[in-house]
Length: 375
Image (cartoon, rainbow, N blue to C red; front, top):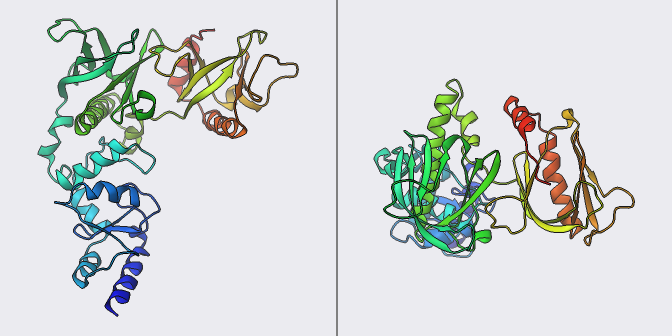
């Protein structure tokens, strides 16, 4: 029967190495396909493709009936062929999301490729590659927690991102240097599917800004404009570096976030529940996840420099409500934390160990030397 023959051919195509993962996010699930583009995709990405029916029409490889011409089209294309076409001018700074990334990043990646064909035509990349971007974002107030419309300007020439509290203000409320900026999507924390957290250093401490835009394309364009500006800055700062060296430095996701309990430097104070963020070698703690400034920061170096993480708490430790302890040992002191569950402790310890196992870079020694811990 033609139905069985077509299903068998599709399964053979699925087994080809380039087709074994989703063409858009890299997930191991490839049981769906766009029969108008000729690619195998995962269930999550198939939902996004369904929202652009003028470009992509999807079917289940196993559950739906396939026509002969549709199978022939899949045979003539496949993930590698289609990627070579639609990603031919994909700029190195533009973030290519994986299956672990949030919905807005994955949706705009797919729309950028197939609906707007931005990576086939360089001229279509102007919104995030021009070196200058101006617009309005909803920004969370530091004190009252309200989101208010604020004007933002990104200037590659000046090397800054700045925002203004009033639309007609001449002087910016804050100026963020490009070399110190990080941006990461935080929809759950911010409570908005398009929520973006921007951080920068102020007096050697981390300052958080929380923003969003109602339009997914707008917020992702802002994100990639920041990455483009940082990419060009790093190209000048490190002229001999390859794209492969620079791209991981453009923006970074956090190693781990979540609640733990902590005690003070004397280990006699009661344990307090705090929100923790592990950002590279900085472990920051906040009273609330959306606080603008951390209550304190701990620098985590490498094992070669006498840093280590231990399972449990020292004997006779008291005051912790949660029972699953972690001790971070630094050259100066021990930091004590407690997790609510064994699994949380395991994940935190893996995140800490990953940092400690990594050799320190020369610039990280300077950070360590000037680090200010807030007790």
